[in-house]
Image (tube, rainbow, N blue to C red; front, side, top):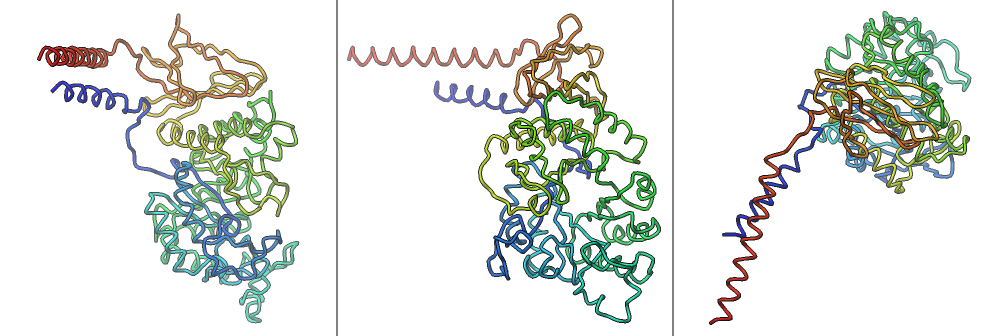
Amino acid sequence: MLKKVLAFCFTLLLLIYSVPVHAAGVEEQDWQDQTIYYLIVDRFNNGDSSNDKNVNALNPLGYQGGDFQGIIDKLDYLKDLGFTTVMLSPIFDNDDKGYDGSRIKDYYKTDEHFGSLKSFKKLVNEVHNRDMKIMIDFPTYQVSPENSLVQDSAKKDWFNGTTKDQLPVLNQENSQVKQYLIDAAKWWVNQTDIDGYFLSHADHFPESFWKEFSSTVKSKKSDLYLLGEVSSNSVIKNHEKAGFDGMMDHNLNQPMRDAFSNINQPIKPVLDIINQHKETYKNSNLIGAFYDNPNMKRYTRDMVNNNLFPGTRWKLALTYLYSQPEIPIVYYGTEIAVDGGDAPENRQMMNFRADKELIDYMTMIGEIRQMQPALRRGTMKTIYDKDGMVVFKREYKGKINIVAINNTDKTQIVNISQDELQDNKELRGLISGGIEREDNGVFKLALDRETSEIYNVVEKTGINYVMIAVLVAIWVAFILFVVTVRKRGKNKKVQ
C-alpha cells in the first residue's frame, strides 16, 4: 500500500513538472507561422541511385545526385530541426547543365535526375503527412536553348534576346507566353497539391500578368503562398496588389549580414528597415528574411573573413532571425555552418556531418519560435539599442517576449522598466533558463559577451502550495515506508 502511495506521489510530481512553462494556446497555422528551409534538389541528398544519369560529384557545374527520394529520407531530420516548410529549387526537366533548375526544357515534366512525377507526388504527400508545407521555385524569365518552344519556328516571337549565359529570354509582352506560364503553374497545383511558388525576376512581368497568375492558381488552392523576388523596392506595393503574398527581403539582407558577422556592430540599420517595412508592405509578417541564397556567398564566409568562430556568430544571427517579425528562410547547410564563395562554391553537395552544438541550438530556437505566438505574429518595439547590445519586445494578444542580444565583447547589463511589461510579471529565460524578477520597478538583464536570451513574460511565481503539499506527502510516505520496513525486520528477528 505504501509503495502505491509513494508511486502516486512521484507520478503527480512528474506531471506537474512536465507542463511547459512557456506553453501557448494552439492557433491555426498561417504562412507567417512558417520557418522555411531552402534547398537545391540536386545538392541535398541522393536517395535513389537509379536516376544517377551522368552524375559526376567532381564537377561543380554538373549533376551530383540529389533527388526527391533523398529529400523524403531527410524530412524527419528537417522537421526535428524545427522547419515547417521546404522550398525547392526548380524541379522541371532541364538540360545537362541545369542542375540548379535554371535551364528548363519542359515545364510539364520533372527532371529525370530527380525522379518521376509519381515520386514528386510522394514527396508532397510525405511533407503533408508531417504537417509541413512544400514550395517550388517557378522560373518565368529564361529557358534552355533545348526547350521545344525555342525550336519551334512558329514561336519566335515568344522570345526576346538572351541572358549573359545565352539562355533565351521569354517575351513578357507576348500574351501566349503569359498564358502558357499560367497554365503550367495551374497544372502543377492541380496535379501535386503543392503549397506555394517562389517567383524570381518577378518585376520582368507587368502587374496585370501577376494579377491573372495569382487569381488563377489561387482559384485552385486559396491559401497558396506566392513569394516574389524583385530588383527594386519601388514595385513592391504594386506586386502586392497583384496578388503576391510576400517578397524576399533583399533590402534587409546586407544590413543583417553586417550586423551579426562581426562583433560590436550596430543593429540599428536592421531595426530601422523593419520599421520602414510597416509602411512599405501590406503585411510585413509575410515577407522573407534570409542571410544567404544560391546567388550569393555563404554567410559563413563573412564570419571566416572576420576571423571569428562561425558557431558563435550563427547563434546570434539565428536568435535574431527567429525572433524578428518576418518569415525566416534558411539556406541548406546553415545548420552545419557551410562555407563557400560565389556559385557554384556556395552550392556544394550537402554533408550531413554532425555539428551537434549548432544543430541543437537551431532545434531549440525553432521550438521556441513555434511555442511563442508573439515571435511569429506580434508587434515589435525596440527597448534598448547601443553599440551591438539590443533588447526588443514582441507582443501579441497579451503574450509578451523580450529578446536580448549581446553582440559585444563585454558583459552587458541593461535595466528594463517595469512599465514596459504588465504588472506582477517576471521574465523566464527560454535559451539559458533562469528567472529575472523586478527590483524597485526595474528588471536587470545581464548577458555575457556574444550571447542572447529570449524571455517569456509570465505571472510572478509565489509560494506553490500544491508543490509543497506533494513534497510533504512524498517525505511522509517515505518515512512511513522506512518505519514499516524496520518494524517488520524487528518482528522477524523476534520470531
